[in-house]
Amino acid sequence: MFQKKGLLFTPDTSLTWQHSHAALPTFFRVEEDLYRVYFTSRDKDNKTYVGYFDWSPEKPMEIIDRTLTPVLEPGELGCFDSFGVQATSVIRHNNDVYMYYLGWVIGQPAPLFYTAIGLAISKDNGKTFKKYSKAPIMERSAFDPWMVSGGTVLKQGNDWTMYYISGISFGFKDGQAESIYDVKLATSADGINWKRDGITPFPLGRGETNISRISFVNEQGTLKAWFPVKRNGLGYRCGYAESTNGIQFERMDEKAGITVSEDGWDNYSIDKMDVIRYKNSLYMMYNGNAFGKDGIGLAIHED
Image 1 (cartoon, rainbow, N blue to C red):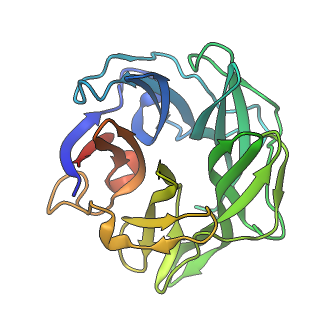
Image 2 (cartoon, rainbow, N blue to C red):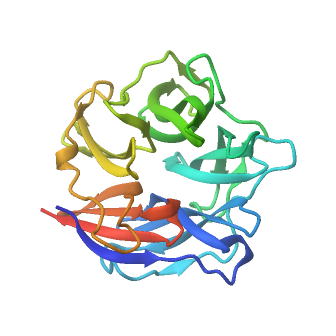
Image 3 (cartoon, one colour):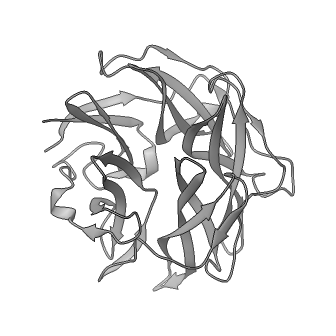
């Protein structure tokens, strides 16, 4: 089981772009024992920005450094990311760092929204980023009629794989907004141009409405996956699955190792987790209730 250590990082509300929330923790390994953790905060108008803090599993309850300015900001009016950006996957490619992010705009009627996936590239080891394009690198398709979002990218040699959130539908049921999305697969030869054919490694199970951003740890050829799952009438919980080929995953949610607390900031949801292995332990950063409003928590699973 993961042992919860409490809130590690909370938004600095003295900064205009961190008026609230620290959501979607996303690991990037800078050095052997140093990680840069990207997160999303909101300004007073609910627009979203990406920042980061530096952290080491050697001193897991300490923040080493943090940025005072966002590394990624909303795009120009009319662009796919004009209302906000959120980092979902950050990987090294040769001498560059690629940040895959979702950009979003509001729709009507509220709270309808639309997202697409963009790319930003860093030349200084993940400290600053420049958007690859004002346009998304992946947007809605016949397989994803409502939205594409939350891409987790894995790279092996010249083969790139993205596990992305595929928006199936958005509607209203008994006066409440209801979204339906699962996680589908895309492939690429360069990390920029992506091919989709509707393969769904993470389909919805009975009573489930949403599966969100996937976090992977590769252990001796077995791809282990943690991810948020939403079921009817419940907040997000942590799902878990394993695969040896990266396409067919066996759900084993009972092995997720973490669930909601009896009370406090994560008593309703366990959401947007990212997991790494360091030495003999697994480290999970995650959000609790209200999509990261309180901040980012830490949990540790020691072998």
